[in-house]
Image (tube, rainbow, N blue to C red; front, side, top):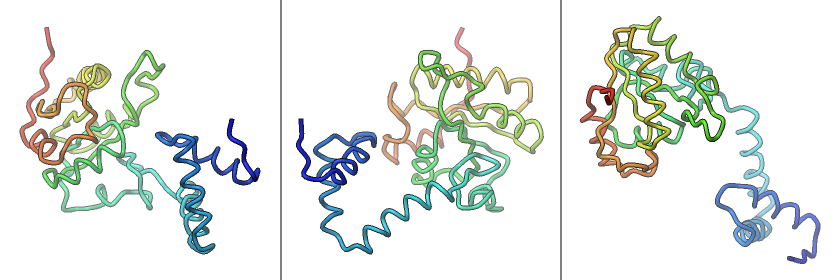
Length: 204
């Protein structure tokens, strides 16, 4: 058991250790690093986190993180608004944008269907996707979820929900390895998988 010379130090380390991928030793190293910094630098660091939590918004169209009610991508008239790329989370939007191979819009589900984790369709931004397709001038929906069992299950569910709308439903090419997370796929492979997307086919 670690003996801390200061309760303030201990509390700070405990808070950092709550972050994903941060263990006790890394948390201690980060806290000691901040202690060595100028007070203004530490205040700027803390204020940026507080402002992020208090002021960040989610786009009222695609649910991407934004500083405004409608994100820059949805507000950009030069994007192809007839195409929607459905992704699991915000990191996937960033990964696909980094490829510079896609010029349509997005729809962030906020996760994938996972009965084991108690996550069903009602926990995701599925209904708003259906409404976008039904009310907008949408020609294609690209299913760009990670090729995991949960991702495939979600793809199939979305296909069933959208199949009667007449919109073209495609899926990214399997250049992304099975069970890989989309956000960790290299830009070239991910870019090719978007460009070489294929019609969604229901397995018999």
